Image (cartoon, rainbow, N blue to C red):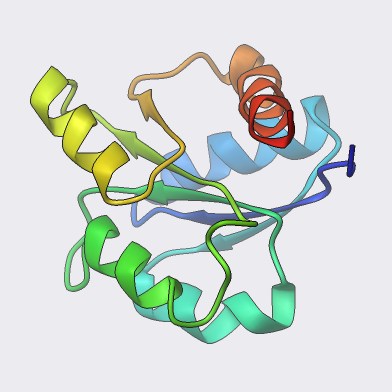
Length: 128
């Protein structure tokens, strides 16, 4: 199994961005590139070559679902799992996000102490 090292995190809220970065770098030991918009993520994704993408659903301008669609033109999403983060925890919404290609959905608010292990579990499940 390939070791997960590089995670692209797309989130417009600076406080959530900071919590996720600390949780994944300090606890998980991952290298995290934080982008504050879908457009920024599209500009950085090829250079950073993420192995995993954590994507906020609700963002101004280009939302998470459009960002996912456009990232698919630059990255092989069959090889790079995408996990949405959202405060909208309706079962129909979660199912819709999975149909769009999300590997999983993490509900906000999330436990920063458990975020790295949750992402590692999703990574390992996809590699099995």
